[in-house]
Length: 357
Image 1 (cartoon, rainbow, N blue to C red):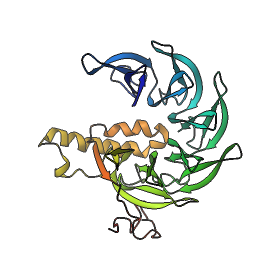
Image 2: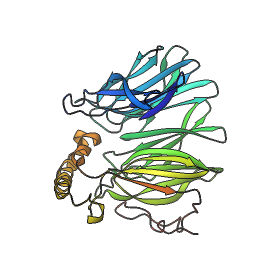
Image 3: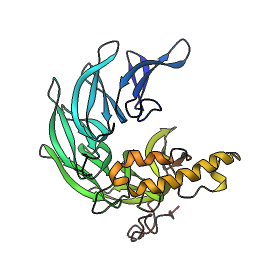
Image 4: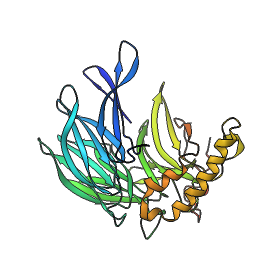
């Protein structure tokens, strides 16, 4: 979901992945704030194919909405950049993508770029994500970045240096223990800075607290568990180091925000390994039974996840519960045991559960 303002009017845009009738060939939607009623009304629909993400951005006086098309029975699709014509978003440019999952717009000096995370090319997760550069009239391919089933990307700036991080989900060698990667702009292109341990990462986000920069990775699946720690890394001046591991349940996305000067970090959890009674909704036995069945199917589909791709086998648990956790991190202190070794099962990092106060 993206929110943006055009000519003083607030819009909300939603990327829809799958529908009951048209399946992956469903429409994504743009809503407009009706100032007289104070509510959002449907303003425009966009034809999309298993879309997972969209990004609003502007260049000079031009306004764009880029939408990644991930899957419609095949991964090799065209994703679409729309341009605002004063009344509607119309097709501006199509770019060839490979199971595209995320995108991020950023500027370096006076140049504008759009990075697209590619997940699968139809045969392998070891495919390249692509950075496009604005030529003044369209986006041209600028650089390819080696990624491993990338499901998220985020560009950010530290002390005038530009970085881009990719959340890698899976490859055939390391499986779900594949590392995610950070690249730094140097001499006119991005070069790899470091690899960071993640487990089936599906999202990465950056945020600042005072003068410190952090990267939050949503660890979704270790290969055997969904209830695993998601990792927060902190910039130490030359590289990112582990700062904290936060317990999550099939984490899907991190969202930082600030209220009254305090920084919060929200995480959307998708599904847990075991649903205890305290997490079930008010005595809905039917919902509990559906959860159980969902987990059983989820387990079966996980075994063939490499063939059908993360977004498809993930659907099997859609009857399960979603959870959200908000954590106030404005007073966070570095965790104890920063050099402790990893759990064998990839469920977290020992020593990070306790924090100095």
